[in-house]
Image 1 (spheres, rainbow, N blue to C red):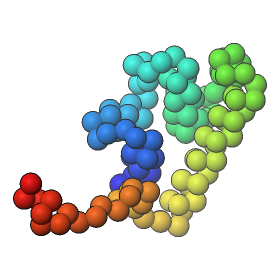
Image 2 (image 1 turned 180 degrees about the vertical axis):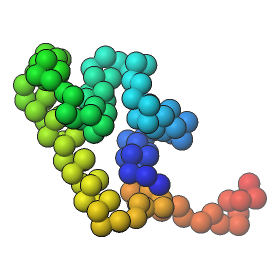
Image 3 (image 1 turned 90 degrees about the vertical axis):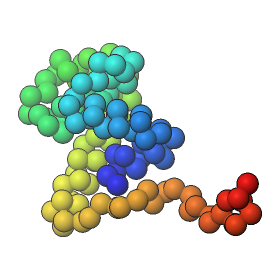
Image 4 (image 1 turned 45 degrees about the vertical axis):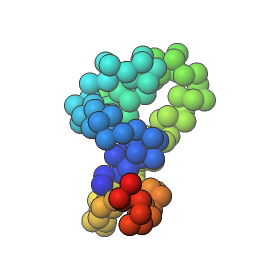
Length: 115
């Protein structure tokens, strides 16, 4: 399971919503999200894919919506996530195959399965 999918599952999204979100992340189309959330995702997408094309006007737009400190938090966190991804890629670290944060499923007893 990819890290994005795992974190979305940890946040409580079901598989249908996770699929929708990962599609948005892949395409960069966040128009169906609330404006502030869409802007944050758009920033993450652009900082990941086209950081050299971001301008001071883009940063001012982020600050206008989130304020200076929250905008700084967003830029820092997005940058940190990109850094960690590149480190993992450089070392060819494999993704987890399952959600490591999910509570282990306890096997059902025979009486529970026949109810």
